[in-house]
Image 1: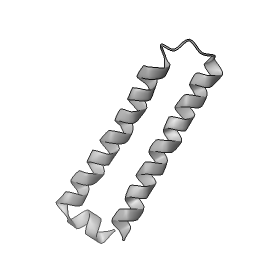
Image 2 (image 1 turned 90 degrees about the vertical axis):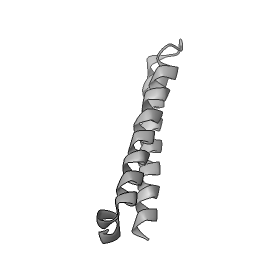
Image 3 (image 1 turned 45 degrees about the horizontal axis):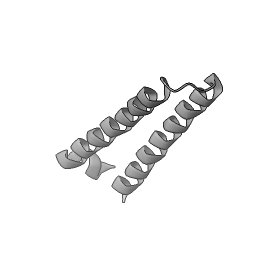
Length: 66
């Protein structure tokens, strides 16, 4: 963790990944909302997007801790 806190490149990379995660959630919302499907499928899509973003974020943190 010390390496992450002291190196600017790691901080920028972390912000980049966070931006990508949020962007993916916005994209899935943009793609799912206009589709004529049941509300439960839309909710399911948002839950899947949340877990995928969290999973990607977790992988990045594990990689940075190596």
